[in-house]
Length: 150
Length: 150
DNA sequence: ATAGGGCTTCCCATTGTTGGAAGGTCAAGC
DNA sequence: GCTTGACCTTCCAACAATGGGAAGCCCTAT
Image 1 (spheres, rainbow over the protein chains, first blue to last red):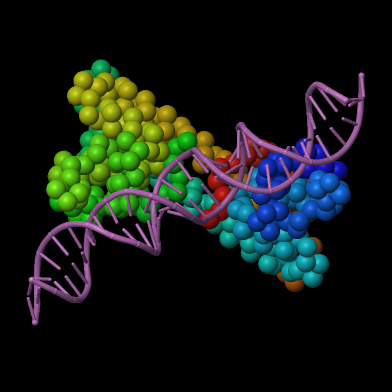
Image 2 (tube, helix red, strand yellow; image 1 turned 30 degrees about the vertical axis):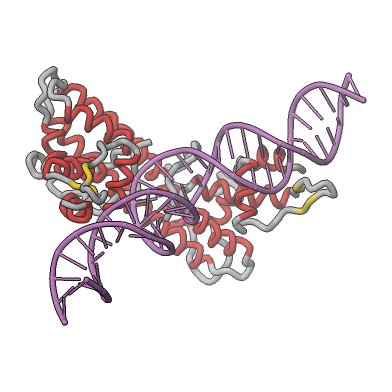
């Protein structure tokens, strides 16, 4: 099967399949005499595995670890579980960070009249912190975030 | 004040200050005869504004909108509020996505014995979905995520 | 044989940030 | 006056993961 069919069957784009091969996440595919990549059902199986791990928020590096365990017939499920739980912890950390931002901003927005006057506590708070100390949201979300709006 | 002092005072790195200038987020700074950038307290004020917006998860584009409103003395607070609430909605959307991943993975991890045997429902689920239908977490987190583990 | 769609590689863009190299500038000390 | 070291300048590259596109080869159906 060609790369297009493998992409369709696995849910991983052809672009990404080539990228995963290039970066060593997956072994180099076999080639036809003319240079076309050829994929087996086994390969598609692996690609689907990658796709699902990606859907669960694993990074390529994380997936690398999962694939190693997947292929290791003598693995210990404890190792898999640990990898998974570490990832869950990381997800929860990010969730908390985002939640902190959202609640802070929500508090500020609640304090904003939202009319045609220019005065707005949201801008005031951005100008200088600590002006709007309502709710329970006094904790500042320090520590730079890796989450930005798209 | 030089860029280093402005960086220190604002919490925005010198690198980023130059980047923000290059991309037009902030106006080009004044220069000394020898080419050094010079910043006023007002400039530092603006940089701090940017830093705080960044801490609240705003993208550079989002910050651009906020800065425009900040500088617009005839703004309507309703516009600021709308921008803020849109961002809150986006944050909550991302939170829900991450929460979905985390709970799915947690359910799988709970079903994993975590011992020295190789069989593991986490890997089984990654191989083929729907095998582990425990809890209430049957919904699949489709829609590709822009969140990966670092 | 020719058209079209699929494949190949290579390069570029994204977002926000950091790192480094090569070189100019400034202030302090000798 | 000169050296030294800390600072500044610009330019270039990299990260992670993905998409877009160009130039050119390949395969199949008509």
